[in-house]
Every structure is written in structure tokens, then in C-alpha cells.
Image 1 (tube, rainbow over the protein chains, first blue to last red):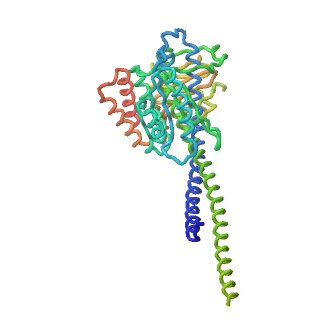
Image 2 (cartoon, rainbow over the protein chains, first blue to last red):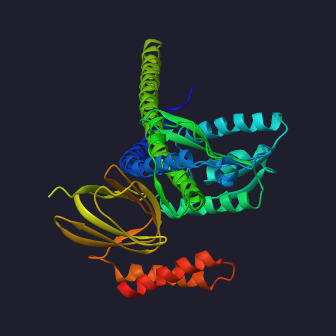
Image 3 (cartoon, chains in turn green, blue):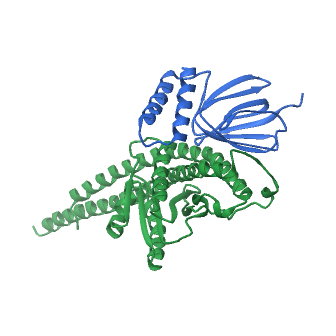
Length: 291
Length: 130
């Protein structure tokens, strides 16, 4: 059994850990509110963008000559995966969930004999993937320096993607991120951005005819790169809200666990203290009796 | 006078401006300025760097935009832009910053004619408001 001193030390160390996790929880809660607000404010932009593109792609008459970003290269050999994770740890299953989802996808691609290329955004994703997929990672980025998620970071990512697409380095591009649902639920998402999936076509939108200036093709070829930035930006916003939410609940759990541990240790400490006293008493009494 | 329609300007961070009493909006479209009045035909177009002028019942406002897309449909005008600044409370430093980065971009060798044209436009507009 541990000595009284050891128990005392352990109790105080658990208590100070609890203080840290409690503070992290509060910080995460404060940040979460802002991140959530940002994510909600950012939604109209990406929704509108999506709408316009849907209307445009419905209006396009000559699908064969449509920009490659919309229709794809016609091949399905090389897949590019953009895995978006956080730069910091201690946020529960946040990063692991994204990686898990991504790994499933990677396995599928590799099993089908296709080529896999990976871009990691955020240092934690790189750390987790470098062991298994070091050869597949072609680019790693992190925006540790930017305090808030901003559009220009998203733009940088999308520029790299588009550049690689124009050099025909890949055929299909998918991004992985966590969608924020609420504080305890974040859903890892896989979203294909090149070629663009327009499965959610609204039936009634095609009735509406638009005037385009300049031509449809030109608008589309300008709009699609922007759409990629927008989608990535949206993913970043969702991710940052998810990260804070995940960290908050993880730290809340940790604080509670530390509390339970302190209780248990305190009981053990009291017991062994009492045992020591009883032992001493017995010694004194039996000493007195033998006289 | 029921010559009003609604306008919404959104940038990636938030919904920047939303108005219901707009009578005319002049936007710097890619192929020249377009003035949009009520019951304009549905249109989708691009913006080049320039000034958006909004005439509404509550007065006239002007904004600088970097780029953008406009969509007009059923008397709803949506403007999507990555950067928008109100000319009323414009920050000189910010403008100079944008100007500088545009100049740098212009000096790069690998830009094509279209990009060059856009950057020239941008600088011109920035100079005029600075």
C-alpha cells in the first residue's frame, strides 16, 4: 500500500491537472461560441454559391465542352484527398474520427488499384498519417499562425488543388472534415469537390432561364475555382467549430474523471491514516498490557 | 412607389448587407457597368474590381468590391464577394495594402492578359478612391 506521503502527492497532482482541464474547457466554450457563430454566418455564402452553380450547370447545353472542373477528366485513376484536421491536440476523438473516415476511403482506393495522393491541412492529421501513408502525402499545410479561420487560407489551399488539377496530377478530389452538429456530435464528412457532384438538383430551378454575361462557359470556368475555395472555407469553419466543441466535451469529461479520482484517493488516504492510528493504538495498548 | 426590390450582399464570413428598399444598383460587371432596376430579366454575371453603387429610399451608398458574382432573380439581387469595403468609413491603410499586393502581383511575369487586365482595373479604382 502506498504511503501517506505518496497519496498526498498524487491527490495534489490530480487536483492541479483538474484545474488545467477545467480552464481548457472554459476557453473552449468561449471559443466555441464564436466559431459556431462564424460557421452559421458563413453558410449563406456557400449555399448561394451552390445555388448559382446548380442553376448554371442546369442551363449549360453542351455538357461535353463543360469546364473540366465540373465534368471531371473522364478518368478515375488518381484520387487526391484533402484531410483537414486541427493543429492542436487534446480535443477528444476529433482528429481520430476524421482520420478513421479518411483511412477507410484510402483503403478502398488502394484496393481498387488506383493511385492515392494526400494533402494534409493541420499538423495533427499529418502526424497520424505519416506512419502509414508517408509516400502518398504530397503536401502538408497548417495555418497555426492565423488566429481565426479566414477566407484567404482557404483560398491558398484551393489554389494548390487547382494548380495540381490543371497539371493533370489527379482526376478526383475529395475533402475530409468534421461537420458540426452540436457540442457532443460531430460527423466526419467526405465530400467530393472535383468533379462537382450535382446530385441535389432542384427540379424547379431548371424552369428558370437566365441571361448570362459573359457566356455560361466563361462564368462557370471562373466560378468553379471560387466554389472550391468556398467549399474549403466552409469545411474549415465547420472544423473549427467541431474542434472546440469536441475539446469542450473532452475536457468536461476529463474534469469529471479527475474529480472522481480525487474522491477515491481521498478515501484511500483517510483509510490508511485511520489504519496507522489504529495500529499505533494497538501497539500502545498491548505494550501497556504486557507490563 | 413600388419600384423597390431586395438586395443581399454576402461575403464568406457573414451576410454583409441586406436591404428591402433598393431602387437601383449599379455594379461593375465584367463587360461593363450594369444598372439593375426592378423587374430586370434574371441574370448571372461577374464583377471586376470596382465600385458598387446602391440607391435606396434611405439614400445612396457605395462599396468597393474586389470581385464577385451577382445573381438577379424574382426581384432578389444577391451579390457574393470575397472582399467588400464601405467607402464611407474606408481605411486608407487597408487600401494601400491591397494596392501594394496588386502591384506586386502585376510585376510577376507569369500572369496572363486577363489577370493583367483585372489588376490594372483594380489599381485604377483603388487610386481613384485613395
